[in-house]
Image (cartoon, rainbow, N blue to C red; front, side, top):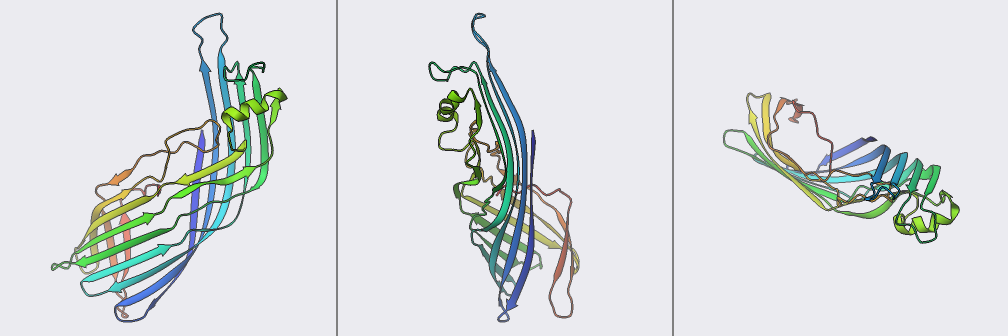
Length: 289
């Protein structure tokens, strides 16, 4: 099996300080997503009797697509000597453009689910190129606060919410598969492809809330350590695997990161703005939200 997902975000951000304690900003985001999937699934049904024939199912799927979508992120912040608060909201993404190509073969040998008087062996195959794609990012919002302690260390709290996304078509081709024998197409479609096209990929996501807490210890004026706990709950809304759909089987594992250590370096220029650079000893986990 081959399963590769890559998503690159290109951002442009602006912020404005309206007063000593209040500022706001916005970020324009272009998200470029590519996904490649190739899989073979084969299964055999061993008969109880040696006089019965073996039943077999074979599925070969290969597709790849790319998609470009746009997002706008709005934010505001309150900044006091010992307290900071920030809030962001990201409306649902705007689909721009994208294309997909897909190949599929679906074969049945001595299948017991076929209608009476139909051949028990059948094969369906099809392919399509340059199919338009849609990919969605849900409405999300995040809150964060930071409290400075008496020893000048800081406690940080944050939470982020993602609304769910109803099932939608990433791509779908109206091209019907070539079936042999041709008479079995309707029978197979009724069993395995109810309300979906043969070349169709769908996606959906459930409602997710993640949160984190961190403790920042300033070793010197320029060096600090940050440790904490955060969640990375899974967006996958279903553990089911449907042979008729192109949708891959996604993991439904939730991730809990108990301890994360970061080493940070700060530099405060003359304008009193602070810049930070952080190093993490743990490889970043793939986003599941």
